[in-house]
Image 1 (cartoon, rainbow, N blue to C red):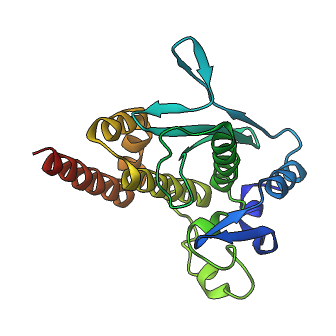
Image 2 (image 1 turned 180 degrees about the vertical axis):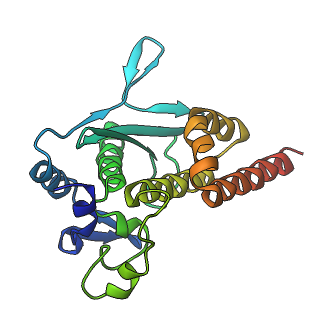
Length: 214
């Protein structure tokens, strides 16, 4: 099994909806990952804050967790803000809030590898499902980038826009941009349309913060 096979797995029976959003069971997702690659592993990134090391990064009143998932020897890191049920940042998250976000970030990082990715793209069925053969046949025989790279780029783009939508100040916005500068710059070469979308949203968000400050 490889990453293309993960893209084809139908996860619909293992999801639940909350407040209009679809969530995949992290336990089931990780079990499927281990079936595909018994050597797979994940790591929750930690950050020094004062005298302690915490499993999240603080940016003002916003907090982000980072999870790195390695499947088939390929590490992918995903970020996710700590949000409440209204998708608003939690200024003082509890241990439960952090743990919940870490598990959601884990499933999102797994999606970077292909499993359940179609959920984040707003689709009902995975790629190459037998109900949609025409779409599969329409793909170019030799794409400039692989399906995994395209999927990862799209998910990263969506994650950045998601954070910009809930970012609360210009300092946090620029700190987030700096932390992801290398990946954003790489999009400029590999996926220019996604790069332009991120730049446009950054300029729009920065302009809104400037207007509010004035």
